[in-house]
Image (cartoon, rainbow, N blue to C red; front, side, top):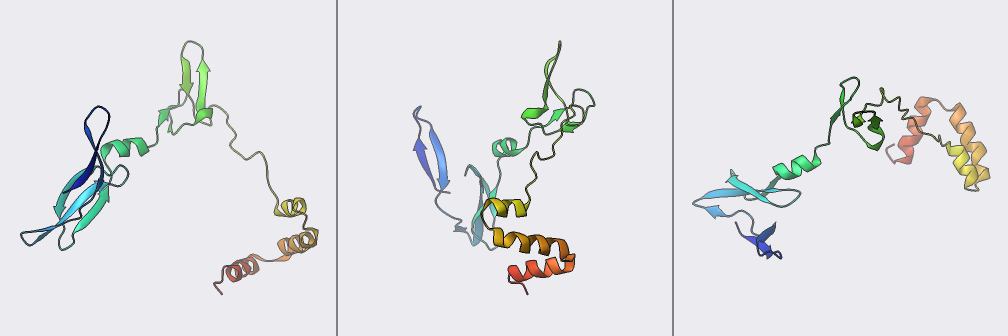
Length: 153
């Protein structure tokens, strides 16, 4: 397999991308496998009639993409933390706690109503029409309107 290489400052070549696609050798097709994220060559296999490049993921990229998990200090539940899931416990330093144990409320602080948004957008002639439509139409009528708007019916 041919690759472009670029030397970095310390002189070691770094593989940047694959140039040549699979080739036929002794009547067999070759399928080259490269990491879809970093383009690192991962090997090759018999293409079974197809030649070219197939993509996978290398161990380093997989580890970088896997979400970090922590164990709740109080209940032991394993979860993916964010910046709100840290707490300082005397004598323990910073620990991680789940939303339940830290009593975190994840509901949105602001509920936006489309009619209010239309009012703020200076479209008063559409507000009454929208409110009436929202209050009187059935779910079947709403689905039919949505289908019409998307050009399905």
